[in-house]
Length: 84
Image 1 (cartoon, one colour):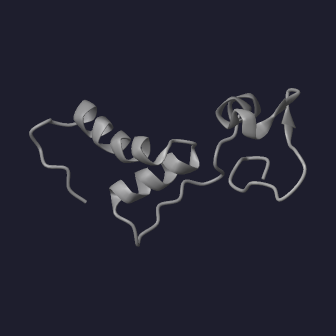
Image 2 (cartoon, rainbow, N blue to C red):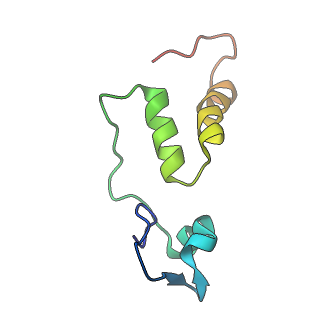
């Protein structure tokens, strides 16, 4: 719960005197939350993995869907097809 993967059923988590869920990104930055291991789920495509971890990181659904293609366009040839 402290890293933001699960919301508590009751109670409140304070980070630097502020409610965690009021601004989870700020709280994670203050705490220095870094996943212990990088997980890639084999049953998901590369893009689906990126969308999943984007949502875990706090991106909204639409933003998590746009982010992988934005990265692809910046890092790779814009004419190359984005494949699995």
